[in-house]
Image (cartoon, rainbow, N blue to C red; front, side, top):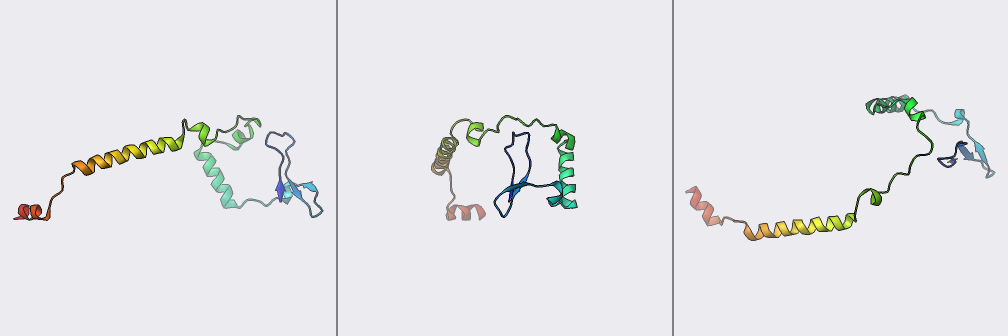
Length: 112
């Protein structure tokens, strides 16, 4: 089990829980190395995003929190969906009332 300190903590260090229940620091050599395919994929992704590994290291530790979905989308999302569904039902009902359908007899007359 790996445990890390809080994201804003400058003394952040990975630790693991020992069998005795104590936390011990994990050295870089104790971690599993990523596969070459995963490294290549990460580098390709960074290249397509126009980001360098140095850019990632330069990110400040304290960043503003990411907004939740409810904070990001204005208004109640459920209310907006219900309003759109009601509008679509109205369109469908109007279509059903005004559509013209051909009877089987009408199609035979056109063919003959």
